[in-house]
Image 1 (cartoon, one colour):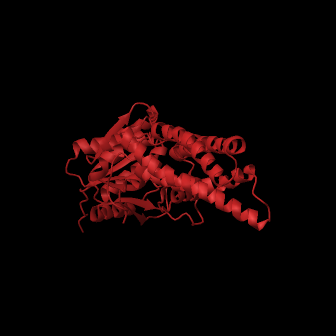
Image 2 (cartoon, one colour):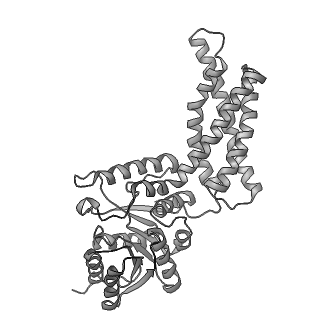
Length: 370
């Protein structure tokens, strides 16, 4: 029986200081009919380079790209995608896979075919509920999945997967995503959610070798990189929220008072100043938007004003309700300030989603995922 020729996509395998599993992965892919394999040597030690050279020399299906120094997995993937874009003009897309044996050839092919049939980015997703999954992987994926659900509105069962099928139509998107190391793969997902790039998940076999000790992931440093966008937004919001709460208290305590219009005046004056600070930080440091300033300001105000009014009315209504409940004349202003904190946290989450998808988005791409 002839092997099916799978020439509609390129297989990308980035690797750093590989062992024999890389050769096994490449050989299995070739035997299954995958005809174009792009290996990226991401600055491996001299004694490991011979593994790459041997695969290139013995298999015409293999193209070897090399970074002279380690630049990170994200940089390796972008190097390969750029190469394919320039040298494989007729390709349908690319599949990224790890060279440590965690991705079966059958799953690579299944993701490639799903990409071809749907035109979506395909994510090969593992089952983290299985007994053999290392705790750090189970915990990390669970936490990241929750963060994506809350902040990005994306339901993802495997946020850490390295098995991804990317249609050629999205090569420009993916090579433009920020990040050079492990944060790149997370930023890719954020970019997909932000610009409406369609995606689907395909279940794959869950494989770990030796508790995943071969991974080059550095828990503290790379986790900070992975959560970079969200952490920056939280920091920006904490700065502006702290300023907003301080000014709200000072204006109400010493200037406007704590009646209905006093709360309104304190809310507005505090929010105008904190909004200016928040807008500047978010535009330049968090989302890195290149949009024209006028249109972005208009969109930001369209979000910020309803959020401000919601905060004011909620604080006043809850304060008055508590005053009636506890039979007091009014809630003192410091109490209103405390009430404002959980209300603004909820509004913070809503505002993040809108700012990410609409206010600071530079362009529109794709549709909602299938």
